[in-house]
Length: 82
Image: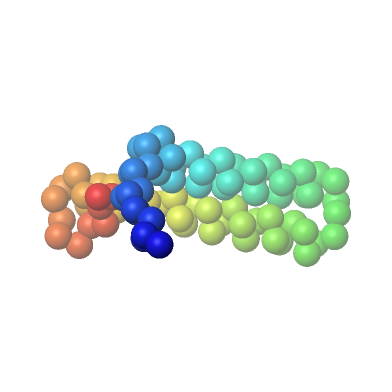
């Protein structure tokens, strides 16, 4: 019985590697949910959860922008997609 021939996996298209739209959409969703929870006067735990999600999304977006600027500057510590 012969071994199956394994072919290398092709790289993903750049459109699927773009994290920006995912982070921005998720952050916006959390912030819209927080606003809705505030306006509907729901349980505080839901409001705080949505605010925390939006806050963490903003922090993540800022880190992504920081890394992108470092990559454009040519910083050795910048994370780059291969």
